Image 1 (cartoon, rainbow, N blue to C red):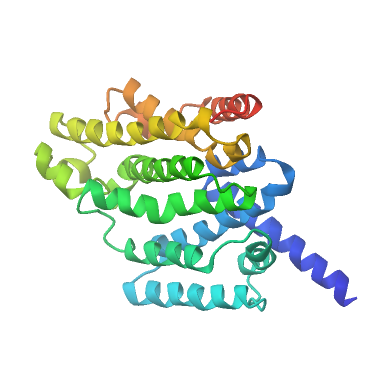
Image 2 (cartoon, rainbow, N blue to C red):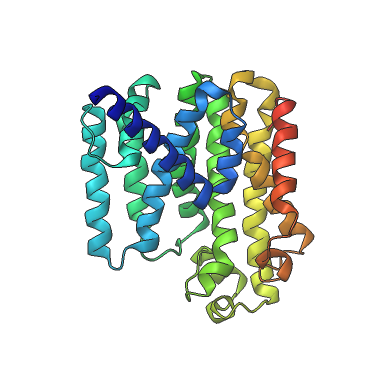
Length: 293
């Protein structure tokens, strides 16, 4: 009876993680579904872990509450690596994965620390800071995915680093219209000052030549990282491809932004085209089928 109860618990934990990723990180959900079956659990575990941490900054009512929740995850991570996780679905799901996939404790802790440091005031001071946290959070997740695939190739890890930096910028751009409704800004302060963009234009969702210039510059930097990531494609093991497949939707978002002339508040960017989810799935499937990213 105890064994069947445990199996049920693991199954429920797995379903919780998959549902969580599908709900809050659908692009990574789709790319994970396309990964080889034996690696999907690891990819879903990483994405659920990231989603749990990201939700803290979105739902915590004050810095003290957020700090307590991040500390809970630090303690929980120690328990996970000790093989005695609390009865929390994501923690239960992660426990067998961390050892099976050789995920380093310090890498997982790095994500917690970076998530806490970016909680509260969401605006980075500089493009360099945005790149740094993209590296600490997203690149680390892609490096851990490579660990799951057994890929230690240095060029693959460089590709993952560029992808993580690009993803941090893409998320900052994509989050701009949503955060503007909360009177928050996710575009780097140095870029705002350099282009002469008015914060009031952003918080009111109002386009301007200066804001378009700021968006263009950040999008161009993000696109350069995507291109650098893809430049390694012919020089890395084919086994690395599933970890780097998210480059497809980073590129698609930047392409949509370019087609909208970098007007971040245009309906083309604030309203997802009806066929975009299906088009994204097809694009990911096509790249995956060809072993590309």
